[in-house]
Image 1 (cartoon, rainbow, N blue to C red):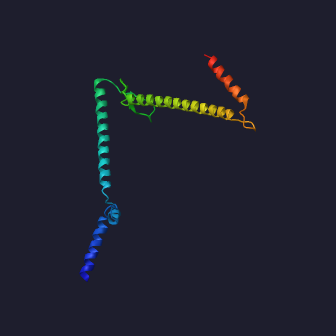
Image 2: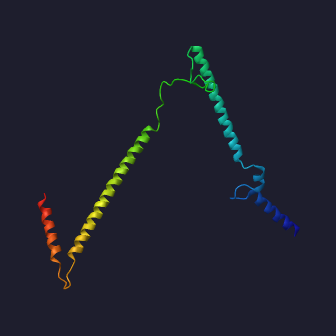
Image 3: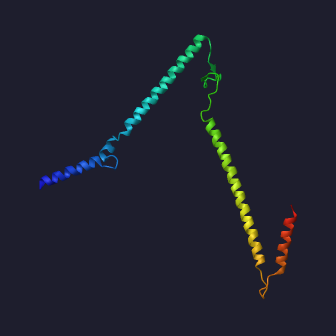
Length: 166
């Protein structure tokens, strides 16, 4: 009986340590060993090394300029702003310039197409409303069921006017 309890407790311990599909265990969390901190520290070191390398290259470049007789240009004479800048001879081309231009053209084309669609929709709705008005007028009847001749005559006049316009 004790053997079964030991086996069950060892199984429970294994489950608590692993916790499949549930992230890290409480023990690992409490100790701060989740694996991501090591990657974070490594990335931090890489970035630090890069910044030191850049600073070293800038220092060497300024020394070369002094040796050749070219002096770096100071931004301002104030003691706070002792930043050194160099005159740029060329602007870097924007690598996304063509893509941005293409996107702007596509957006314009989309807007124009949407405008045309809205205009066609408005014209359709206008035609439908005129057609409904005409049908309503043509379907009007007197008390005895006869069509109202005024509406019929007006409709005929409108048709004649349309045919004479061109």
